[in-house]
Length: 237
Image 1 (cartoon, helix red, strand yellow):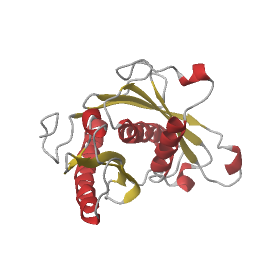
Image 2 (cartoon, one colour; image 1 turned 60 degrees about the horizontal axis):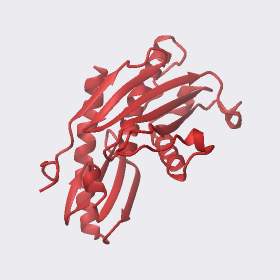
Image 3 (tube, one colour; image 1 turned 60 degrees about the vertical axis):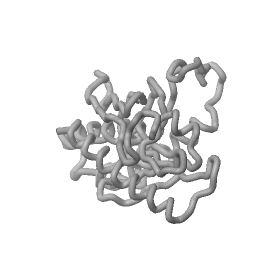
């Protein structure tokens, strides 16, 4: 039995509320169980310097966690004068993931920055940030299309992410903190809506895993991604 009482393939309750920030071109608050992430997308007409003159656009991301997002207070990274390695790794993952669903030629020479701020953490924050970040990105791109700033839709497909792992010897989907902290194997799966894989992060935290177990986790991830994409569509309807 999972600590939450969910079955092995059951996701946490998912909700996505859009338009939660007045000034951002796109924004949403995504809740995956007790993990809550505020996501916003901001459009800049100037691309990064290394892309000027190429005709290509860029999507990047920044990620942060509020001091009391967890059960103890963490110092703000700004107060420490630098970002942690974990934060840098996560925001690079978010950026890579979102760019995989974008036609950068159709986007044109502009940059969209997706900010993901964890309000409350209970496992799977990077996955929630990717899933919610895509919704914010979609809303921002919709404004470009409505304004006639782009000739076609730069977004090629949905992008979402879910965690899967081996907990108490069983493959499970969408780990909360109680499971994630005790999992023998931990993985994050980023996929498009088709679904096609964008990125897989897997590691043996306490026990090695077999090829068959990895296949089971991939099956769970596909099912979980389908639920997340359905939530994205419902939020945008």
